[in-house]
Image (tube, rainbow, N blue to C red; front, side, top):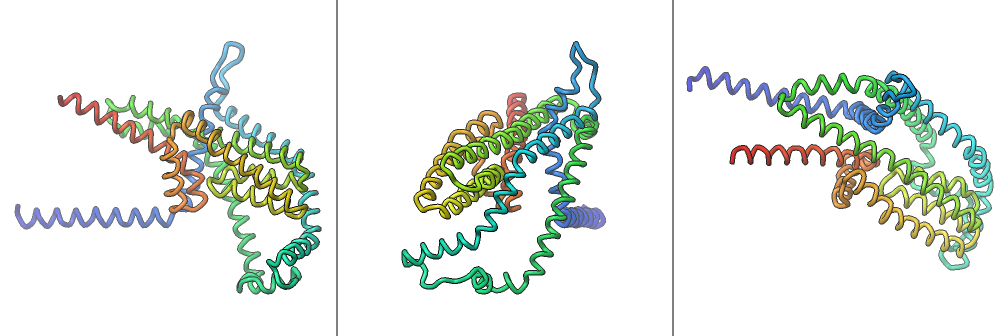
Length: 349
């Protein structure tokens, strides 16, 4: 090899490595935007089968335009949310307001119970509790409020971006798939199309499962707490339903909230509520979730745990929430790669 050829190869290798490093750095800096894009793509994949069902022509009706099918789904979701809001929000606000008004009284009752059981030496007021909180929580209250407002505004804009982007993903799905398939060898395009449909089906099953689990947990929490006479059961059930979408810690948050509110009535009621939520969580974790995730989504319990650990470590709660659909997509890719490898080995033999 001549010196000129060697120099050319070295320069090419350095340029490729430098380009890869720059690309990775750019992707890391844009990780927030990439996460929004990924969430939008998952939502689009989740609703894609429903869009196909609506737009598919039947004997008694004509072909429905894709944009109209997507718009119908969006309007249906808004209508369901509005209906739930009308049924839940008024009593939720009333109970939350009552809970806030009773906070000082319940705080004093809790202190009395702690003093009687020698768990607290002296009584303090709410103002003293705030003043004696860890440094930074009271002195930087204005900054904390500003950060909270900024986070809320950013979350609202992020949600709007996800809704709009997922809408366009659904509109352009076929064109985008056709464009990317052009880069796949002709002999493999059929396999890629099958894998894509399977991944969409699994993500759609995961999305439906999230709605079902949230509804089941919220309904059972509300019914059980109402029968046990726990105050503010609407608030607790709402927290439990939302918490069901957060792996691992979400059900714990709902249970702890229920026990804390029940403790304002009596320790016996708090113990009963704790046992109820423990049983409810065990049924959900050992029966509902495994049946749905393993049979419909096709992700084994081991893969679910590993995905939750890795997703939570990489991206916190958002990573944990998206861990299962990501694992489902990766399982399709790995399975397709394994099948292709076996086919190549058989051809060689």
